[in-house]
Image 1 (spheres, rainbow, N blue to C red):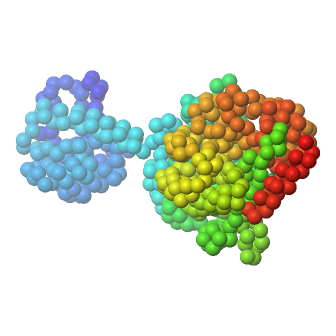
Image 2: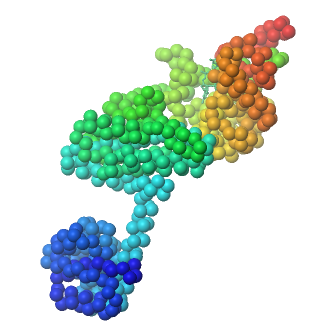
Image 3: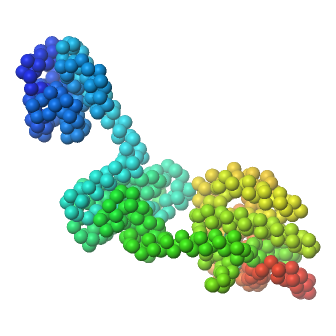
Length: 571
Ligand code: C2E
Ligand code: MG
Ligand code: MG
């Protein structure tokens, strides 16, 4: 700052005071200040448009405004300029109020000298600069430099007001990258960050300059397209943006194709507050993420109806659990070499009074990510333990595995519930209960549940990774997880004899399991003729329609008996 000339705008109507200020500032003897004079607030605003000042020295009593209103008007119109108030009054209350409104300093005309005034000016400019930096940090995302969620929300309110005044449409666009987690997990956070920076850069190029762009968090970006006359114009604008965004992103030595989903809500049709517009764009984006055909989804009224029926269905499922309409079927797991039935997987079914017997795929998606799925999980564990106890009393000693969602494992109450359930069945041997977790669970989530998995394992509950081969397991995390078993996903097993690729995958999974000393189970063995192939590949255990379909608990003892019988017969 030192050495450079500063433009100081004196807003003062009293000629005597103007001379006084001029004298004070010339006392310093250095030619640092270019002084500009305005007698009224309106003149000050006009002058500011022509010559940018670095600071304003403001008198509070002017012909066109007086008191603190003078300051308010100035700060509203020129918020980025530091203002030092020069008052004729010794009034501490007034001084404090001026500072709280946004003045940088409050000086009393009669009690200052040149040094004091100069120092106040320099400090005011420096302080304003620091304040602006802090505000910038608070309102921007550090990685991409884009406005953050809070900033976006404030500006969305302003954009809605502008659209109201100009009677135009406004599009709220939410972008989400479909596979960002996978990039982060497989290539590391640094590459993930680099990708986000590149996406932000392309968004800046794609979204027309006078519109707001923001990073709301994670891999979620947002834009506001304002000044649009018709819905068709908006759609055309969005098509252009999508075109500019597509195409691979170079990260390290790779070219990464990153499909994006886009949810859109429109003012005024979909709502007129930031909250409502965001909620609706979010809903549309959720659907865009699920829809493989449509990259862009516009919010519609029907979505609201669908949301309502989804909620009703969720409640029906909840009631079904309480009314014991859900049931566990059991699919045996056998040792392919000896034929021994060494366990069973519990798979949930819903006997709906009006829809008949429903498979998990027909109702679990409706409760995915909700508390009802956790309630079902706790119920499944209790029911499976109870069933093992029943069978034990009939002389059948059979370990059972249950499927538990990773969201449920993350809940603090999970461990307590599990322990209570185990305690209520003391005769079920330790190690008989097994929990299957989907391998597609992102690595980040595994890190979050590592602790609880250790505790569960320490209780003697066995753990397995379900649908193995479809996720992003890296060797290092497999090594660190207390998992006993890998269940090879059925998609690789079903076509084992027809696809060399599947054969290679199963071979590498079995060798991976051997290196890390884990058990291995082939899922989806639809045909018993696959048994020798699996054995040759080093996989001794399997489940699948080729052995038996999942069946009600009551049928399993009889099935095991006849299976054992026929297996003994064929040996
Ligand atoms: P999963 O855990 O991988 O279970 C295996 C699924 O494959 C079962 O489908 C089973 O019936 C089916 N299956 C078994 N052998 C064969 C075969 O040879 N060929 C073919 N094509 N399919 C076979 P299901 O019972 O429909 O369950 C589907 C998925 O639903 C399960 O996959 C599991 O992820 C989930 N699920 C089942 N029960 C529960 C539960 O109680 N809680 C939770 N959270 N998820 C469950
Ligand atoms: Mg399973
Ligand atoms: Mg599976």
